Length: 345
Image 1 (tube, rainbow, N blue to C red):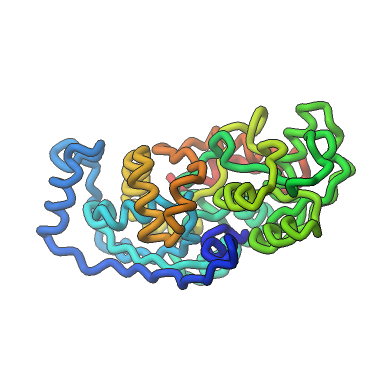
Image 2 (image 1 turned 30 degrees about the horizontal axis):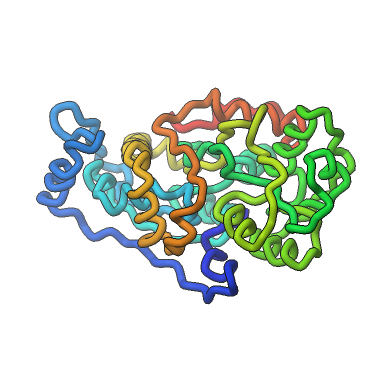
């Protein structure tokens, strides 16, 4: 799934693109782990006798290669890296960027990446359903917040109510059915609107932003920051596809293969702890904005305006099951998958 990171600097007013940084943590020194504990002592993360510091057994990986999309949903990944939370868990984490989350599936299968960060849950559940990957969810990345997603239309569009989307051409990131089409269909049905006439067309978010501005499509289903970018170009938001029956929906996560989690259970648990600790710190909007500006390279003018996701500090299969059940009902997957079986222990 094409996520906003690679398009951010070019989407607004034809900004010039900026290459993604490559993050490679340095070898940990004993004093660094101690310093991380001291710095975090008053920031919801404990490192003393009450810590969950990992003891990684011999034979398990401590060098973890993460393939990431570098979106707002990935902010805890970069917070964990910059605050030394991975180091405090005994891990050496290297972060590389990828333009589309589905591109990381072969990397995971081939062992070129150990964990994928920020991938759309719908895309990965579809891949698991089709047998393309023996998937395990390591952690949740983002939960949909109010107004974080939106179906937007041009400023002079005749579409001024959700009912008029029933006969519209709506841009989504990947061909339907995907998580975008099934959530919008579900919300429309909850309003007693028949979505069977809605025409979905798959394209990258940046292309959808341009086509929307040029009136080449009727509407576009956007996450942030594209909701904000579109509105700054005069577009109007007709409704949020993650509201009502799809409110607080799980959007994306961190993934590994079943084989990797089986052979590296302590590594996976340590990684999850660091991410969830960072998710707790991400309750500070200022910290998240700084992280997005300095590490993900989202312009501060955009990072300060966008609606951020909710960052979960736990992994809850029952939350993921909501999405799986909806995908099954909407024929986006063909088997009744159980979230409990798809989550890493």
